[in-house]
Length: 103
Image (cartoon, rainbow, N blue to C red; front, side, top):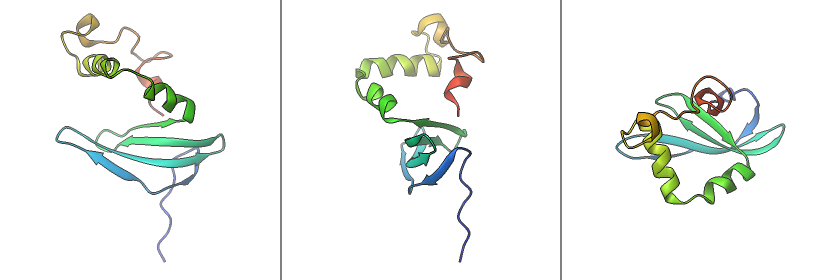
């Protein structure tokens, strides 16, 4: 019998992951259970980025217009059309910055 893989900190149980990818990236998503309730875990294995989102956060994402994602991509990828040459003025190591999105 094989041992269960170790769960990341804060996760008490996890569902089976599914993968979604294209020629640019790949992500794994799965439902997880924490002491605070159910979450959707999104993992980018190539870079090690991971986030847990609860139902309210997912609802906010679902309510966005597709144009908002275009703006976010421009900032994240450093497009010259993005504000301040692609750098999000709020990004950085402080609260609400780049490090806040990593969990």
